[in-house]
Image 1 (cartoon, one colour):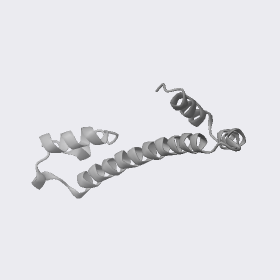
Image 2 (tube, helix red, strand yellow; image 1 turned 180 degrees about the vertical axis):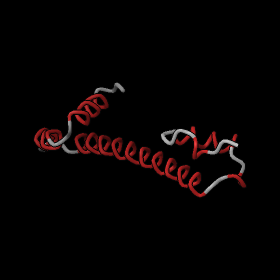
Image 3 (cartoon, helix red, strand yellow; image 1 turned 120 degrees about the vertical axis):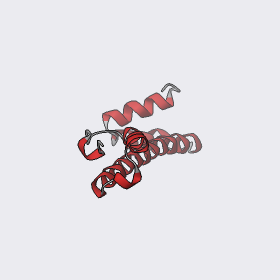
Length: 99
């Protein structure tokens, strides 16, 4: 029986989950297989959390700018200047309503 340890270790979490469910019976799973599966789950969760943080950050800036009438431009510019190029692009895209 082919085990996950012989499979490509760079499989994504959904690929690992599918592989586990279809090809690796519980009694055949090694500690290493399970560790790889858990690592994939943690990577997927880290990606999800980072995306949520990115979205929250941009939404917070938009909400703050909408509710603060005094000094909005200078405050927004200060925050905007500290963003990376990718963050600026994402924020401007969100502000313009496009994705």
